[in-house]
Length: 101
Image (tube, rainbow, N blue to C red; front, top):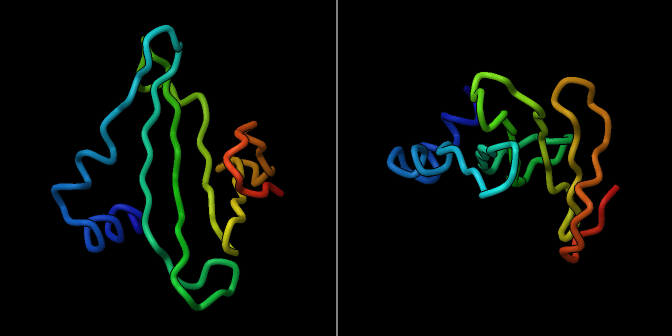
């Protein structure tokens, strides 16, 4: 709920619906939902930092969550993603110029 409230406050309630809309690419067996907001106090840092929550669901059964992750940006050009349930670091395999830990 914290992410929903922060997103709607920062980006507008009308944006919230667009953000949480399910996105399914042709040929994939999953759909993605993402929500982002700037939060303060992440990792003890008092400046606002971008936080993204990603949920992947089964394309045929949207109630079946395949994966949940939280990504934070504790430093400029550094993205850290963790599994929502285990806290394990994730490597998304993307080469987008961001250092991954």
